[in-house]
Length: 63
Image 1 (cartoon, rainbow, N blue to C red):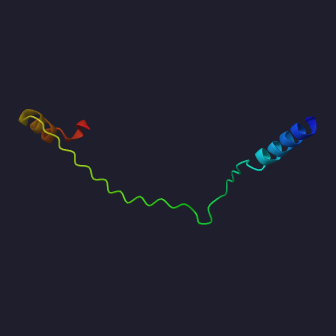
Image 2 (cartoon, rainbow, N blue to C red):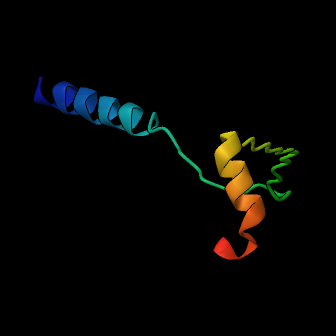
Image 3 (cartoon, helix red, strand yellow):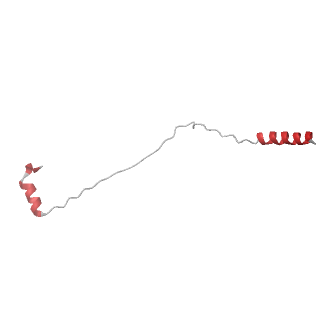
């Protein structure tokens, strides 16, 4: 009885060892390219009072 139990344990251990999953990490053959077509536009609008606009026109050396 112990021989059959040992044979059963040995057989089940061999079967379980054969079912080990294999994980492989490999680099891609082609380089990774990222295509970024981005168009950025800015518009800045400044509104000032007529008094401030006149002051800026009269005094060019302020800035």
